[in-house]
Image (cartoon, rainbow, N blue to C red):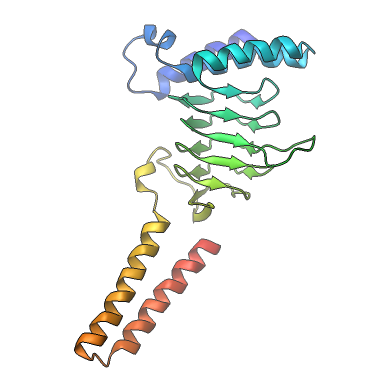
Length: 233
């Protein structure tokens, strides 16, 4: 695929994926993610052609204009859509597959100072929520979803959903609604609710002398064990 054909495809993806756009004119003024990818397409070719300093200079200027930092050596697939985009960082050895959607504030970062592959690999059709940090030489499997503000430091299997700090896989299997981040469970909230219910059982037993506390406590312990097991899958 030629460079310009790829760029035309990138512009077309915004029209297809963003329901907010009302005019093609907006592409030139309101989509920093699109322009960051545009300049990356050009600088990536320059970088591979051993014009590394020039590539870095151009991407530095792009970073100033878009507030998005993509290393020219990173590999970005086709039809990648960066929505809003402010604050995104994609490191040198990162690999992003086709049809990936990335929201603002995402970091595909490294955790090592050594040479070699040290940034994540994002496979096809992945959706990465706002503020998520994916760190190290790990792989996010095809069709996976990463919840907003999650910190991912381990591989995420294909067709799964990961949330939390550190991120844990909470759901496996295909999801036909890839943008429904509002439906992702909040594991911190679920744990907090469990603790409140446990306190309620204990306080009620102290006040009323409830002799059924052991049964109720066992039921809560069973719920807690099921919750932990679901995070370990």
